[in-house]
Length: 187
Image 1: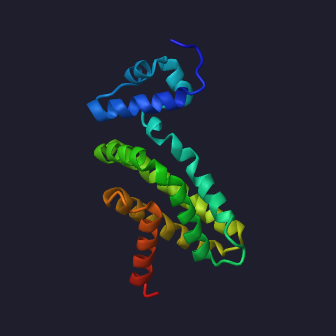
Image 2 (image 1 turned 135 degrees about the vertical axis):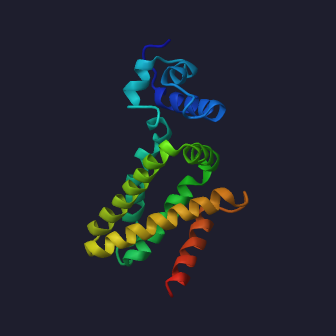
């Protein structure tokens, strides 16, 4: 097995996804993942603290990316417009990842032990949004409220996108959920 591999984390992620789909999360071990990736168990633990982490590899990059998207929105925009535009930009960036996201989501939802970690992912996204808003000058209490709404809308839009027709874009799903939220709150 190679001593060093520049794409080790991605190889481990791909191997883990295949094994989790075939034999379930609980039925898959770290040594099996490492072997399927053609790497050592030691290499696995250089990249991930446990097998749950391999499912959340790309989530490390998402909150900073959303914050960057929000920072790019016009400075004159209000807090809710910043959130909406930032999330729409994130949706455009994720559009090509529909199948890998759907695969990971099926695995996470099939395993109760992963639900807590998924909630933590949502929490980190909310914190990134809240911090981006306060950095732009939004009142802290208002920023926290908007961040919670944004995370909820994003999660609902992801469900709508992944469960909807292949023609539905993630951006359209988010716009639809955002309008539902506005209608539900009376404008």
